[in-house]
Image (tube, rainbow, N blue to C red; front, side, top):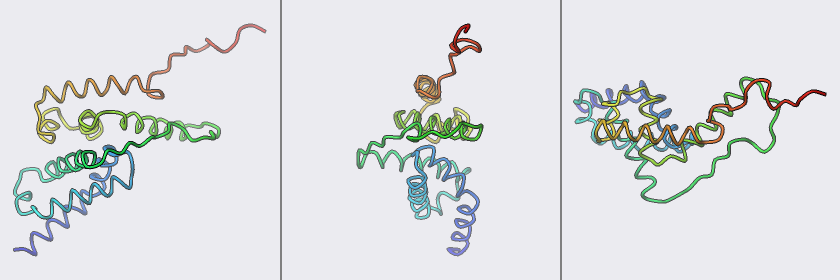
Amino acid sequence: MQAELEDRFQEFVRARWSRLVRTAYLLTGDVHHAEDLTQTALAKAYRSWRRIARTDNPEAYVRRMLVSCNSDRFRKRRVTEALTAAPPERPGRDEVTGRIEERGSLMAGLARLPAKQRAVVVLRYWEDLSEAEVAEVLGCSPGTVKSQASKGLAKLRTYPGLAPSRTVSGQGQGGSR
């Protein structure tokens, strides 16, 4: 029986690893922290796999563990990371570079959100979970999910690089010569 549980756990990890790391990356803003966080959550899941495997949705259970482990990470040591919106030297901007810069701005904006708002925004809009599913993962009410999502999105809208462009075509390009 133990070998069968071990096989099921390994199959779960192989099938869900990249998705869990992606979620952890959005929670942490750093690929190395994301991998560490995923490994920590999976190590805890392994110890309880017999119970977790019997749940309706083991992935949701492990996702909740990711959020909890990420919160624990900040409780244990208060580390602030300063992400920059752009590198010091900016090469010519093309479409790919623009998308990378936008992603960097999004990651920096997410990093500035409080942990609960960040978790709600990531789970609701990146992982595309319903309000009820997010509430279940975070152990809160759907109303809390709605209010945290609203506050988080409002803060993201004010973050430089994420606010919609205010320039209108033809304005600010100099007048007649």
